[in-house]
Length: 246
Image (cartoon, rainbow, N blue to C red):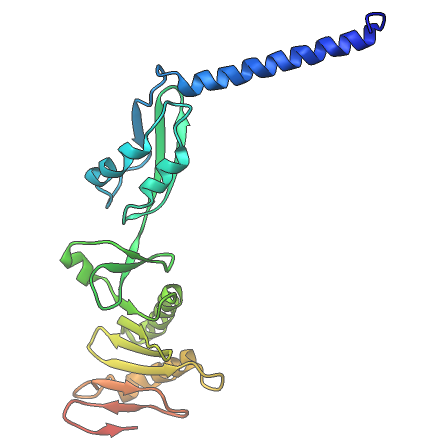
């Protein structure tokens, strides 16, 4: 072997690579364990509207373990995403001693269900959080079976777009366990739209009612309390103290 220069050169190169790898490993261990590189501050990129400082101080200390290099950013992210108003969090290191956090808060667009602890965000996701009672009551009320938040929110927007043509607005929309739709308008009127059917979709059913609303409903001395659209070729109205009429 000593008479083969090429083999000796290859062996020397291999030994140098091994030594370099060992140095890198030792350096990595030192960076992880060295106590002189602590995280000194956590900076939130944007102001938080609903997440409170006290909530952050409750969940972060247990996640901020280790120094600048050994800190588990995923643990910090998961800790923040446990907070009621946090939809998503992003965490990154900023040299030499800072952790930078970007938080996306839930944007509540409606209450959800019968209680006052659940809401629907702008993505149609149901989340549990609290708002002051006056702010909570100002939100429209949606409800439906589990997993239907996005569908109910989309229908609510579509129905309100149709109702806007006659100057009306829905404040409640519910989807029953049997998948029947019911609207409540700002003027107090309840609109029974019923279930989706291939021959009579719920969208055109409401559009048909809105088309005759100015001539058949808006001019009545007393607005109907209930409008039933679950008819193939018409609808029924009920006025307080009276029977039904098509």
